[in-house]
Length: 417
Image (tube, one colour):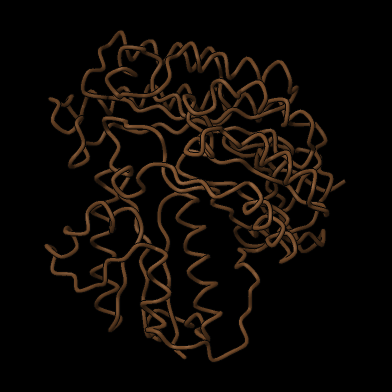
């Protein structure tokens, strides 16, 4: 038997793949090391979404190499830019995530009775429903790692969700590079059917969060999808649809599969069916062709749809992408636009949480927080922190009723009733 240390960076899909690696290793008789220094093998599940992340991955790989005799690098940077690790002098096996268990086990037979329970974090289970996407965005490097969407059957994913619930999961995080195109490779988008079956066919009290779904992937099924959300209390009323720009000209240069009008139609469908829900979206500021007018259109769209969660990212050239060949905007201009958008974002989100103060919310305790606190999620996946959790006897996996007592812009505070 050997001990392993695994570190995961990037999106929820990477987290889900790391847990599947861990499950296979534990079934093979291996066990998590008490520390990095005590590990026989270190596994780095990498991300490369922006240039800063790439630099961080190389630095962390160097640090891991110094602490362990055997290093494996997997994840998006490993697959899209494996040569970067070699050129940096890092001696590591560069592998696809599903090759990692075999490399660690080295053909050995399991030495213990296999434990087929999925690996959970507290009471959170991650379900990657597919790998890859159907987009060809001009700025994206992740597509080189993940490829086109590859969707397992609905029945297979329902059974994986059932196994997570049976293992004790109270929150299931549906994830993928683009959950909205799940099933598209087999001729029909299946996300509404999958969510409906998970909520209808699996017994138990749990909640389901749906991960990122590009507007181009869900437009056309957005009304059916919103109907599924309206039918099932097990679904958090939360959708992450990254618009990236409020300018159709920029969206065309980005080669996004949607235009602003389609994004508005998706938001309208959820507004019509859900009284209390959270819209999460992303904006890229400073794309090479973005003019002052384009930026203003993004600002106008942000103020119009008022998303409760917003990720603002400055454009970063990624090697091998078409956008990397474009003449970029200056760093000062990108910083100014990012600062302006982030200020409006904080204003909008702060108003959302201010409106929650004094309300009563049914929540799921999902994770331990800092000190003696716990993180909870209400029906719209908004975060509420309860301090002095031990005093109230709150533990991850429990449901509770809270009064919202205050907020700190990006999250609220509450106390049990």
